Image (cartoon, rainbow over all chains, first blue to last red; front, side, top):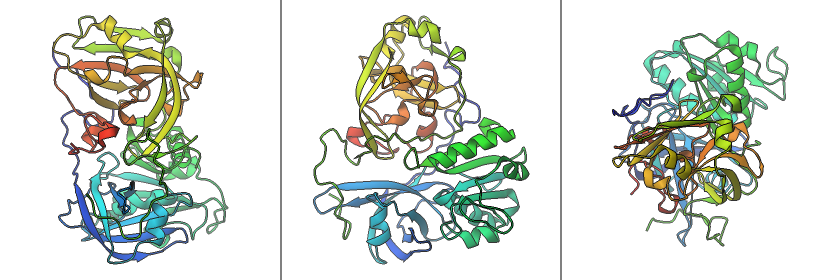
Length: 248
Length: 203
């Protein structure tokens, strides 16, 4: 009996090239900014860095004096060609790692990081893509957008982003300049009334050649991916990345 | 040992001994993490097959699987994204029962679990035998919710939870190990939380 065929629809087959991955590094914090009220943007110098694919993430690991450790994953906002790694971290009030990163980290600090990690939620720089992000779920799309600008291929990307308000939307200016559809659920934006993302809005951005990427809270990702399915996007053309608690 | 991070003390001083290293207790919540849209699967259309390196390739429908001797798991589950959930209660059938019917051949050493969505994850055979793995359809005495892998998911609670494939429909016995979905994307081939085998290259 031969080894059975295991390739599923839309998934990488066995023996496919593994995604780039790096080990633990001690990064130096180059800059710390607070671009939105609840978030921190860290730029890191990572020695012996392995170039990431746009959409991959890094793990940040904190260690206390007594050896106690906590680690979390964060999407990379910078393009692979950026000489630094940029992370955008939303402060979760009851969190353990994000409040420390938001309030306790200064330029010059050393942080243990590991990356890049993940090879599914990545854009290859060549294929048409529809990017649908909620809140800090837009972060991996910044890496894709910036990479597309370097390549001169922003024409390949269509972007829809959702936030409660404009000031809470990460990278709002950069997304507006890129022509992203801005969806605000708690305030009007231009002549769009405050409302959740709608199927018609996604239908207007969708073309059959696209791979759709959905990133956000569990609730946003579930709603947005089902909207895409309802619009007619095949399941196997949709890649989803979810984070946070199930009811967020 | 690693150099401490300046100014970091951490929140918890009393570690629950049930928590593997680097994990935290998520409490009553149960985060949902999947890489694809949640499928819509009616129990009548679901089946579970065991094939590959077996003497007797076999499959069970929903009703047939429910007529097998039941088995349950009570205890913790551990996600590689660092949450752990205690005191879970799952019910279904032991993977041992399925393998007993399919009869793995002597050269079967690994298993690839495949989901209805095409998701795959690889496991050493010894990690799904000896009362360590289940195919489950109930959680807390109720049908397993679809977003958590219902109607039926694999349950291998002693490994990180991406190994417990949601919407499982097929177990394929193999001679040689092959990476599944997350394993091709940087995650560990075995995934023992007590050894913190999160990523490729961890020991």
